[in-house]
Length: 253
Image 1 (tube, helix red, strand yellow):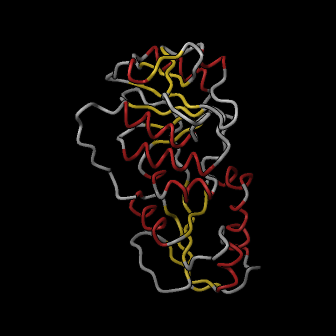
Image 2 (cartoon, rainbow, N blue to C red):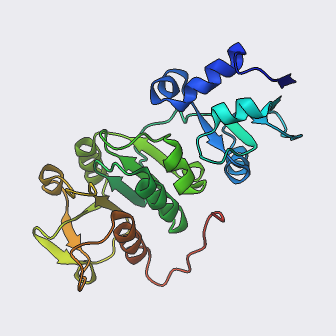
């Protein structure tokens, strides 16, 4: 099948997926570039592939399209020759049996969130929970920054107050990140089941959420006022991974 016109009704509906409003309505999103499309195929979330060249994918619709269509669909400065329409995950519930959770309070930079998701995958975390005011889960910059990590870890949006209370009720120890009533990470022990709570790039974790944690921790630093949230999150996730564990990435990202 080949489509050459940007005015094709099918193409016009797919172009709408560049906007969050229509992504939410259709429960679909776009992924661009060979690497991300391949990762999406492995994860089984691809519905349709639009490409300039021959491409085969079992049980997936493949449509050959014109350069004009690719340019209209593209989410980057240099359009990639392949784009996939993917279905959103349907399960948005908190995992009951996870051992490692990452909670993100009001993060707004999709690059930071994508990097954190990629790191969470590398260190064997089970779920990432974004607060309701955090950036869109299917923002294209977030997906690109995750380098496919979004396909290998369960990411949801949920009210963090509710999530923290539920996690603690289920026996998960929640560590907030703050100097306020906090301890250096070296002073706070590892836990079998643990959640790390990171805050907004400018304001940190809200006081309301910090009041709900089991313990607040911080990373001791010198000659700098603070660390980028993605860097701090990576340090904390590594530190609170099992001591002595030989970490093997679940996927090459």
